[in-house]
Amino acid sequence: MTPRTQILQELDNLPDDLQQQVLQFIQALRQQQVNSPQTGNAWDTLATLTGTIEAPSDWSIQHDHYLYDTPKQAQ
Figure 1 (cartoon, rainbow, N blue to C red):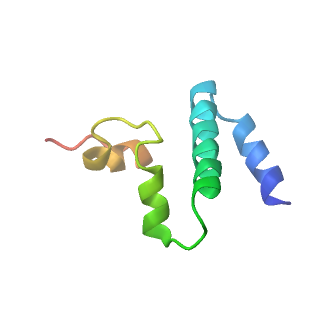
Figure 2: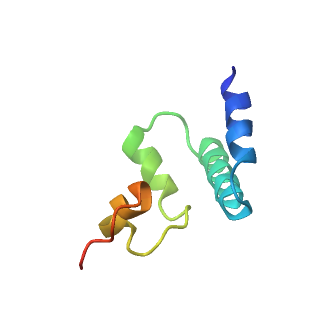
């Protein structure tokens, strides 16, 4: 199975709001590809994507809750 086929299958299973986030991510990747040569490293790539994906404001503290559905940590 090609990556494209896998991506499309996964995309079909996402709710509309997450599909919108995937679209924004793809657009950011394309814009980054157009605007910069492929000479950067992974950190440069991540820096260009900063702020392009919406997440809860407590994501950095509560990532286990959002990823693995564990109880939220006391802050």
